Image: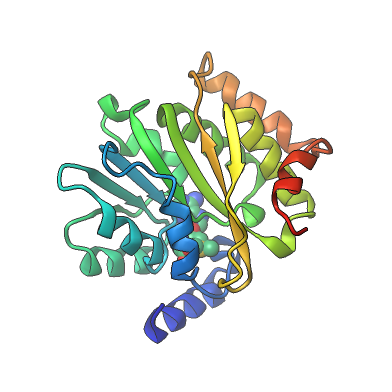
Length: 229
Ligand SMILES: C[S@@+](CC[C@H](N)C(=O)[O-])C[C@H]1O[C@@H](n2cnc3c(N)ncnc32)[C@H](O)[C@@H]1O
């Protein structure tokens, strides 16, 4: 992470703290852990949500095969413009992740191989979390992966419990990476594998919305995996 990136990030955090959700970009160690589960030999379409100043984008770009496509979806217009000039070979869209179905070509809905996600889940409204999660489940191919990170310090908070419940409900399998201590603050990632498609987008949104109102108490298996908690 460069000093310029750190400054740009902090400035945007000052403008809209909830949408940015962190005071500093992720480290390259977290970025490496996030992309490690992606099979770059076979992946044809990779989407990134909330690329920010591009630390994960850079890690993805280094591994992207020549025939693979990348779409970065970044809500912040200044980050989006800076990403487009820094990575001229990649496509960036200045919209919200919740619009992913409209952003993709119709033939790519249900065919995305991997989504690498830097969204600040804890500070997103419940209705937006539900809409984004439902759209993610809808656009991934069966067996496709969704990777998102969480800060260790917040793992017991209701927002984190709510995210785990959403993940466990939306995906066939949810795993965690090791804790990345060389990140400020220390973090880990959830690696989620898509199963078969739910019966319909509306019902998935409703399911995800209902989850926002309850807090999960049976997620000890995920917490146990995060040793040494
Ligand atoms: C915590 S930062 C992570 C940035 C970067 N991925 C990293 O790890 O350093 C969250 C990013 O998500 C973006 N963001 C917030 N809400 C969004 C949304 N609904 N759709 C797309 N991007 C969003 C913010 O503008 C910001 O760039």
